[in-house]
Amino acid sequence: MSEELVVVVAGGEAPQREALPAIPSGTPVVAADSGLEHARELGLEVTIAVGDFDSASPEAVAAAEASGTRIERHSTEKDATDLELALDAALELRPRRVVVLAGIGDRLDHLFSAFLLIASPRYAGVELDAHIGRARAHVIRGERTLSGQPGELLSLFALHGSAVGVRTDGLAYPLDGETLEPGSSRGVSNVFASARATIAVKRGVLVAIRPGTAR
Image (cartoon, rainbow, N blue to C red; front, top):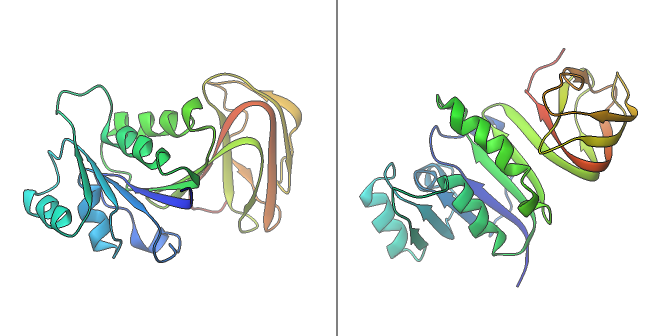
């Protein structure tokens, strides 16, 4: 059975409640380690919890397991972050869309790896978005249309290689078939010119980051 939407709640700092999207009742939720406790605070029922559980309290893990949550324990000395393990578990549910909820936290390395992770080729079969603190990130393969507010900032970054044939409509500074390279700031600080913006890429992957502020 496939799912329309699966929500992944990351560990670390808790997501900002006021910045989160509406989550339909019954949506499967995968929690990464202490994301189990964050999910409970948000009123979300966790379907699967994964990780080494070095940050979730034993009481929270035991209560979740008693309530029917599937617990997938991993060694502390593992080769993947808890978020990566959670995304892989979400993928097993065969969703059309995955939304990650996370806080900014104080681990720049984890934050950097999260952006690389959500754009990984192995998640190319799902539409993937992340709400990180006040910011939102959208992975773009092919074409996507995003809703926003005129004047809202949006930056485009190529990850895992060149993004070729980038075209935009509805942004103040349009791109018309351009190539964005990893390490370039060419796509930084664009702006919604209207309530909807369409972004297309002929080859490669983009991450559109909306920092939650206006120009």
